[in-house]
Length: 100
Image: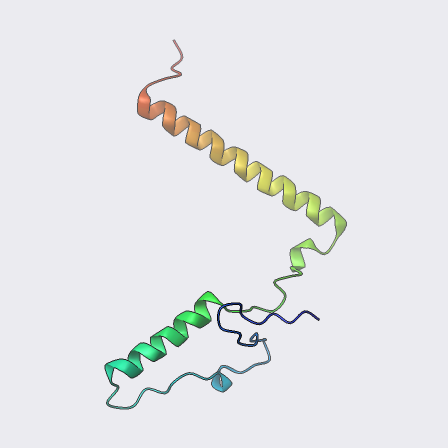
């Protein structure tokens, strides 16, 4: 098992078994000062940017050998489609490549 501690702050990864209530988030007081609200917002932002989701290094859609081929075909098709759409938009914008 690889230790996936966060590179920016060194916190341990949160697994699916870790309840959210055990994460150290500053509690907002009833009179919530601007500082405590800012600390809580930064904590939430950190969890959004570094979720450490379990299973990310071994996704379920790449388990079988044929899955990798199909995934590559899907990514390649998507890329070619985006290139074709971008080329068409460019041609329409500048009025080039018209058929007579």
